[in-house]
Image (tube, rainbow over all chains, first blue to last red; front, side, top):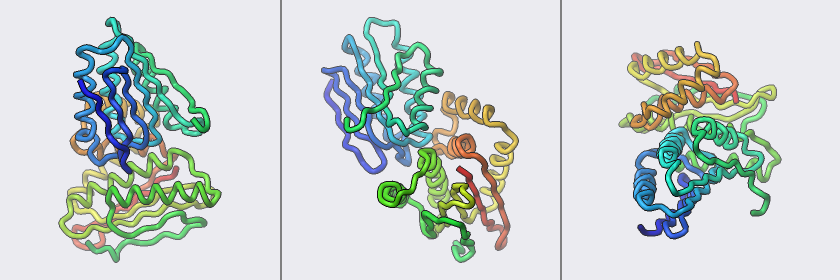
Length: 129
Length: 168
């Protein structure tokens, strides 16, 4: 498995997939016209990674806005991860947002309700961090 | 496609007004405009304005991708008596008219919790995925806006003016 980094664009977030550290970072805005196509290689990387994951895998998701088709990707991702819970490796999802971003907060709460077996932590971003 | 038929709307405050083609790069520039209004001009928008706006604009892009001619739309974001809104207008054909009326009429019968549940089901089933989320988009807009109104009027033979008013 290799480190994969996607630079941030106007429509898509910064993405870093690090197999050594067991870290997935998704940060920025996500409204590609075709989210399915954009996220396909990301999903494939994650599926491959979980064939032999680190003891602890951290997903740091910090989105400012996203479109409904990007939320489909998140839904599929969380569904995949939920099916991995109960195995030896631990998964922590940090759902990070600005304190004024009520939409992202609400989306995080809905994912928590939808995937109760996942450790989704809502984290309010500290100013300047 | 008859962009002279688009009808401009007046309001107490207009933050954005545009007649032209809708593309991803136009959308992202508009987001920059809204962010700049917040940053430099003391305007405060609720966060959902951005998310609803993205869905609205991407819905409009679907139409332009079907059209072979230059496809102009009218879009404005404004405020009337403290009510923030997004207004869009575009010309559609008979087939789209039928589809939109069905969708919007059925959505208007539903309460918010039902819309939320249908949205969740669609997210789960992956239905509409390859439509780039057209169905999901309207549900999203209906779910997060305070009210939507629409009107479809025939302007020339089998061409209709579709107006969508989304109250944030």
